[in-house]
Picture 1 (cartoon, one colour):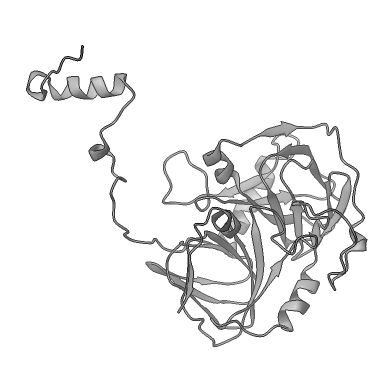
Picture 2 (cartoon, one colour):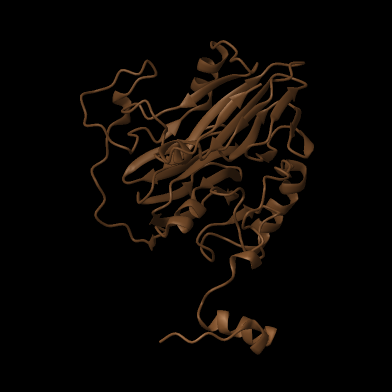
Length: 336
């Protein structure tokens, strides 16, 4: 038999304690419930002129021997206390490796990519396959592939790490395993895949057989392309087996902006992180404008109208979670 106690018979403290003890909360006390669309936010900028001295400080304070990776994570200033995402589903950071250093092997469920910002001469080993790392190269470490880095060059290296950590945290699929590596699959000879997209007769897989995408090849393809409707030129880094994204839940593009051109407004429900490979200019989105130059990193607020204006010929490397939303039927995009 259910008995009813009226609100008048309970104090506010008793009401709150009763809900807490039962692990419930009234919907009307949840700030996000029934909240209409509001401010889309502003781009967040991490200027290289600010980050470079912090990189030097990180070199002095930590090493790959003492920390799993020497990384400065880029944190969304509007996130909740204790959170560490860069934008909703994506985590970015600057990883630093000195000549002679080794970042020991590990693997995790999250997809990860590396885009080289400074230096050259490092090697990434992915499930037994070696990928050289030079300026502007995109190097992939797909989810649950063993990977490690070592530096055979003569100057410090800095690269952008991007992982879909928070997508896995949201879904409860976050896993991590330290080395030593074991059960490593046989390596695929990526030299069989040409820039002309000649695809050998291999089974289709979500894991690209190509782990390194050199900048000069991407720039040649981009420079030969025509501007899209919004005024920018862009090429997509693809898995040559599927012609889809390089990794199942990370989508990457190289974008060229011509000087003096302001792109048409572009809106997407996807979340994006941009890195300035070359050039300078500005981006307006949501509630703000950021001015950027080479090696700067910035985010784009999703669903906001985004426009870019380049002062010089500019190349942007862009990472998005577009594929996650596309697979869930939640992608919404519009030009103009």
